[in-house]
Length: 254
Ligand code: NAP
Image (cartoon, rainbow, N blue to C red):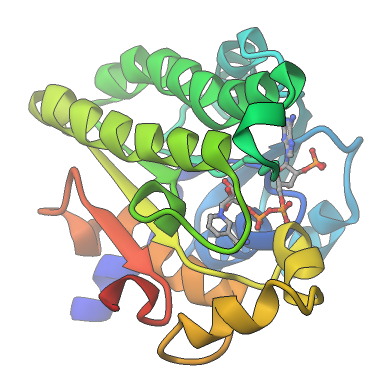
């Protein structure tokens, strides 16, 4: 019964940045596998919630701005209060900022590091005692190929640095938390069609380079990341921890 091992019936999954893009696709995948969903983002009750409810999934929504990293712990605590437990934490919310390093604004650097790294750390830290008390859990962090290679032609030192930190945070937590039966993994997507990349994919100075450097010659879809997420969140990945799973159409193979 191999396919049974991809089921998540009754498990509670908190997905940050679940209102659109990759986070929303992950929510759909986890919901289809039977998970009870808690979505979070800044938008007051986004349309995404209704789309998930229409499919018959249990969905709760908690508004939180992870630009204030103290809100990350509050979000985890609220989610646990709403659903009674958290089995799966998907730290997906993230932002990118581009620009030359020597003129890169402090506010942009701080925003990227706060949302992509600090809030992720604080959400993980808040989830640990809950998961330990339940006998285990799964944390999935969304990193990037930008944590593995320096993308061109755009300059984005803060984003690249933040995603390198996500990957190392993932490995550190996986090592620390394995005795607690908490698995911690990351996904490193390449160029995926979402609001984050729409501008770049329409930019004639960027998109041709992006696609030339991607052996498959096309951007990925959010669903193509979500299937990898389902694997890592499910018992199918029961012996996988500390992994950074690259989903990039071959970009980092070159
Ligand atoms: P997206 O379409 O821009 O969605 C970002 C999500 O994060 C939205 O749900 C957004 O919701 C939420 N968010 C943004 N700022 C937030 C804040 N301050 N507090 C709480 N939530 C916030 O981006 P995406 O492409 O799906 O990216 C998702 C993750 O994948 C990110 O970590 C990104 O770095 C990573 N990634 C993306 C790509 C790609 O090519 N798209 C590649 C590699 C890695 P609200 O606006 O409602 O708050």
